[in-house]
Amino acid sequence: MPHIVFNKNILINTPTKKGENEFLFVAKSFSKDESRKTEYKVAVKNLDKEFLLTIKDKDDNFLIKSDKTTRISPVSFIKSALNSYVELTNSDILFENTKNLKEKKEHEHKYLKEIDYFVNDFKTTKELVIEIGFGSGRHLLYQAKNNPDKVFIGLEIHFPSIEQLLTQLELQNITNVLVVNYDARLFMEFIESNQVGKIYVHFPVPWDKKPHRRIYSNEFVSEALRVLKLDGTLELRSDSRKYFDFCVDLLTNLPKAKISIDVNKELEVSSKYEDRWKKQGKNIYDVILTSQVVDKDINLDFDFSFDFEINVDNFFEHAFLKAIIIKKYFVHIEELYYILNHNNSALIKVTMGNFDRPVTKYILILNGKLSYYQGEPLPTSSNIAAHKKLKEILKK
Ligand SMILES: C[S@@+](CC[C@H](N)C(=O)[O-])C[C@H]1O[C@@H](n2cnc3c(N)ncnc32)[C@H](O)[C@@H]1O
Image (cartoon, rainbow, N blue to C red; front, side):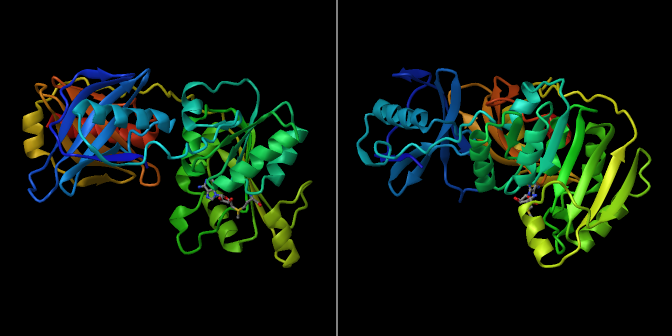
């Protein structure tokens, strides 16, 4: 992580500019606990990118580095901002690693998509097929190659598997697969209703000791049914009898769907895990859920604005810095910062949303007006619920 240690000095006056970097404000941490060390956040703008730097004490000196939550890429923007800041203070540099740190190669690939792409840009009239936890990708590659008229979305949380699949897509010249590094339990929320022909879940981790981590749950199944077209299918294939029984239980008697089960059914292609289990003589179980209903459309245009103003002093005086947990989501106000030399202005660091995929954001308050710094959270149901709770907390 690039950082510079420099002689402790007065903070810069903002707004000011050095090279391409505009320094918009400096904010100072606020805590009633006097043992907590003071920390500063410096807001930087360079072209269309806005981000924060952190200044902390380092022995008798200052250390400046990027703020983890608002870190941007490429890292050259951060290095440039750190150097510009220190130059503006006219301080002596005691240590720096911004000159010879190698740029980390960004994962750039035309078929690898960020989740925002599905919220803001993704549109297709073609049928979608989703494969969850594609692993070595053997099944996904086979299906995509044999169904060029469909768009495949591959979900995986293990990055080496993703890299392996991207390489194969290129080598085999397959162009109808989008790959996402995202937890499948939360992904479906971004897909329109009635668009998916098949969802494959082949050999998911059985999580016998931690069943709450399984892909299948009531929420997952109901989201899967929403995105499936009429007669679309959610297909589990597993070597685990326990997982199979658990899913059959979950899927039986759903009002909008029917199930069919099978043992040792042969598919056109056998995945890496399947080969392994077959060699060991294990049974392979299938349970297929078929959607029998057309669902309502969803709206991804949730308005994350704050339609009120606050008094920063009052709020800071009474702020409660502990997580508030409400069933499936939570809100945790973590840190408070006063923006220096600005009336009624602050930064609030908050972590919120779903326990499996929390989001950390800063709320920027300028003259009492609130907004999310660096853009709004993704419109997931947990983030929407957490935002509503956060509004209640801030209004008090
Ligand atoms: C046992 S492997 C099976 C891989 C492949 N389907 C096969 O049959 O060879 C399970 C895969 O699911 C992925 N996985 C586990 N949990 C996941 C989640 N919540 N979302 C997406 N992928 C997940 C793992 O990284 C792993 O690659």
